[in-house]
Amino acid sequence: MKRIPALVRSLLILTGLALAAACNSSNKKPEAPAKLEDFKATAQVRKVWTASVGGGEPKLRLGLGVALEGERVFAAGYNGNIAAFNVTTGKRLWATDTKLPITGGPGAGAGLVVAGARFGELVALDSATGERKWLSRINSEILSAPLVTEQHVLVRTVDGRVSSFSIADGKLEWSAEQQVPRLSLRGAGVPAVTSEAVIAGFDNGRIMALQQRNGDTIWEVTVAPPSGRSELDRLVDIDSAVKTIGNDIYAVTFQGKVARIDLETGQVQWSRDMSSYAGIALDEDGLYVTSAQGSVVKIGRRTGVEMWKVDSLHNRRLSPPGVVGNLVAAADLKGIVHFLDAATGTLAARVSTSGDRVTAAPVVSGDTIVFMDTNGKVSALRVTAAAK
Image (tube, rainbow, N blue to C red; front, top):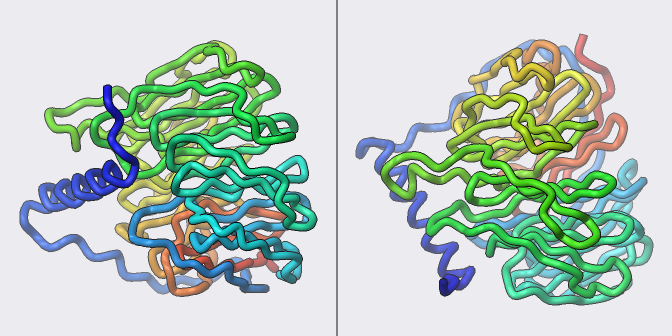
């Protein structure tokens, strides 16, 4: 089957989503974002530094954000800039102009910072100096952060592939794929790794476990089968990062399910209805989801039972969540970060950052959580007093 070029396919997807919004609204005006309610703060959070890599992204949704390795936090802009900052002070350590239209990343690990570009370029920099180590190419747009392990760089591309590159020289080692539906959301989720396996989610609602060394399939499972009469109804993309903890895998689909899957067998341990294109976060107690409707939900990791749900941020287009201490944080379409008590879901603090939307997952270092908005502005927030 002939593949649709990435840019054309992206435009078709965005058009489809616009039609879906129109259909769902029954010719009514789109529902406005919920107004923010007054509350009594029970935690103290302050903005400790800000920075920018510039290059505000175009209208097409990109997979740009921040990555963490040790004391360094890395950020990439669509204009090609990749920069490193001290996570505690915000001091800029280096900046490199890759001269590429960066669309996915960065990812960091094993002394490298890796980012993907619109026309399939994959660039790796030394994480200590910003010096280019290698440049590779793959025949597809990269819209998610590369995952860097001690031996491999793993990349999910928009053509339904997950590919492994050598960390030493960027040579393509293997590639595996799933069929891409005729219509899907624009994006791709970051895979997860265990000691031997790569776990990747796809636009058809399936998850594959692959051997790290050669890409052979260990198992594959459907998290949410497509259903409905129209192609819009049948969207079940896994566009957020797959998470692993112990012997459990967690994933969420758009218009589908959130599920816990056994790492060894691929069997679904539990699932429940959920729709999210943002993603999930984990702690020892629970699984946190920011839904497509703007709810924040906590689910028991082992049981799948809903522990609490917050609907007061409806339609505020929340970012993926992050867990910092005993707080769960998500940013909204105005760059406002909402901190919820992880035990109860009660709003504990609220901090404004740049004023622009955040779509990328934050990174957490100790008591500090770092977000980047769609215009390349980076904000570090520090919890100075926990919720009581």
